[in-house]
Amino acid sequence: MLARILSTLVLWTVILGGLYLFGAHAAVALATLLAVLTLHEFYGLTAKMGAKAFHGMGLGFAALMLAGPYYLAWFTEEAEAPGSVAAGLLVLALVVACIRSLRERNTATRVETIAATIGGLLYIPYLLHFLVRILMRDADSGENLTLCLWVVAVAKFCDVGALLTGLLLGRHKLAPEISPKKTWEGAVGGVLISAGIGAGIAFFASDRLPESLTPAIAAAIAVPLAIIAIISDLMESAIKRRADTKDTGQLIPGIGGAFDLTDSLLLTAPVAYFIFLFLV
Image (cartoon, rainbow, N blue to C red; front, side):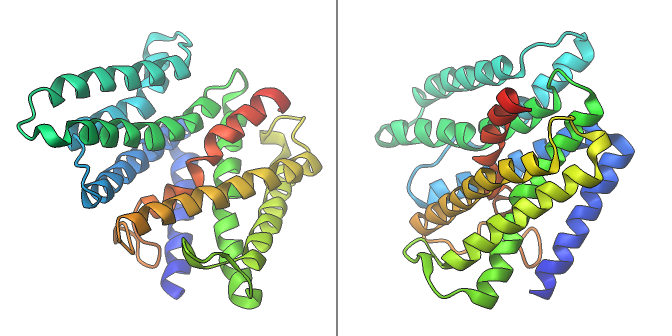
């Protein structure tokens, strides 16, 4: 527990320091790095399931899907739709994977290889690229950066709140066959903490967030996002259980691998983007 707390403090220090010094560039760099590392771990899990992906190719496309839309707009000074860029790269990756699979000597696993490669790209970098889309909203860049940070804080503090509440009050198992340590009490605590964090950031950083995101609205939006974060976290647990693996990596003491950092963001990022698109 101490290692987890220290690692969390160090991570938030690095994130906030990087954002303060380099702004959106740091956010894109961190998101790209985490997407690549998470996909690397995901491909390791699928290999244990018997589906070996085109590893290097997938990681290359992952980096392009996160950084490509932002820097294409940056260097060309044209607001190319980031969703179109990411979707185009996903289709291109599928075409390349299909061509490569025709040259594979092991004909029995061609379909599994394509499925693992493209499934990983869809599940990880494509979903995470919605964080970049939030950064590229048609609004003040400072607001977008803070809004992106708000999403990450709401999702990740749900993890922290669920862990602490579960340790103190947890009695009823949430999904014993998938993640035996998670409890309903922890889940409720995590959602409430997320709502409080969301409202708190909206209050103290009101000058760097859209005017429509009042503390009350922020708390209301944080509730469904926290629930989605819990579901997203459970999906990672299900994948690890299918691969018969306890930890995806040992990148961060007390936390685990990159997948353990991004798990709750994978489904939360796109849901948050569409909520902001219509409500904020």
